Amino acid sequence: MGANQKIRVCHLISGDLWAGAEAQAFTMLKSLSTCDDLDIQAVILNNGKLYSKLCELGLETHLIDETQHGFFAIRRKLTDLLHDQNIDLVHSHRSKENVLAGMMKKKGFTKKLVQTVHGMGEPFTGLRKIKTSLTSMMNRSYTRRFFDRIHAVSHDIEIRLKKYIGPDRIVTIHNAVDDDFFIARPDISKIRNEFGFDDNDFLIGTAGRMVPVKGYDMFLKTARIVADKNTQAKFLLAGDGPIKADLEKMAKEMGLSGSVKFVGFRDDIIDFLGGLDLFIMTSYHEGIPVVLLEAMALGKPITATAVGGILEVIEDGKSGILAAPSDADKFAAKCLEVIRDRELRSRLGEGAKARIRSDFSSQAQKEKIHDLYHQLM
Image 1 (spheres, one colour):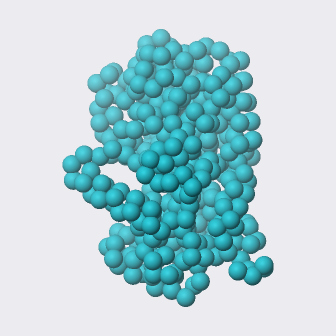
Image 2 (cartoon, one colour):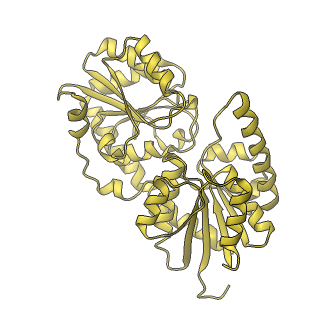
């Protein structure tokens, strides 16, 4: 590379959902696109929100729709797209994309490979477990053979990855929050008006993909305990996923229909989070959950389980309250402590915002990813 030559980078991501990995990929691409010495483009495998937002951003974005093409057709179209482009580095974001990226390097269409590991995956059963296991085996094989760096979003994930990948290739760079959250002015009355809550109701909520690892069963158990002790406490659960119907049934059986609202996927996440009095996270494991960073950036008081990457974000008692996982009684007690103490809520909210500004800003992440690219090249 010449001294003034830009590094040509292609990000590869499915984009089938709008969850933590997709939101983080958008934040990363948005900030990296401002680097004068990088030429950034993206290939997205689904015509969803991520693809739309990248197009709106004005980033060079290509769509190879996996709902219309099988794996080998996608590989062929990706080969045609990257042929003669002189791509220096492909940065992939999930197992399937990692395998495709490995194939592109094997064919000589890129010099270097980076992958981001956003989390350690969800446990499945039956046919899906078999399919996921096969994809995981291919991912590990291609990762070992072809990838130059593996970007873990938390030190906890880094430790887990070292079990099957040598430590020399792994680097931890934490997830980040889009700068828009620091200057946002959420409509805090929007969610109250939409669902008929009054000013005396204390709104407790969370958001995320409805899968077992998120611990939404404990969310409901916590809601039952808190609602029994404080009738003004109301619970909001935003998001969608494969266990949503089971959770709705569980809430009904627990007599929580009047206290818990399933509000679905939210395009207005700033207004949703801004309208909460307390954000909680009951996960059994996490990488660095983006929605947690977003809630903290908005100055929300937090109660969360002390698991995974959450321990790298929250300083207990300063920027949030940590509780043991899988113990609804203790978690509920922590929530009730925050509900009763207005001064504590204010102090936690200020601490949360300061924590994100100092260590989880998109500027900090951009500089580290930018340096990683230059080190490789």
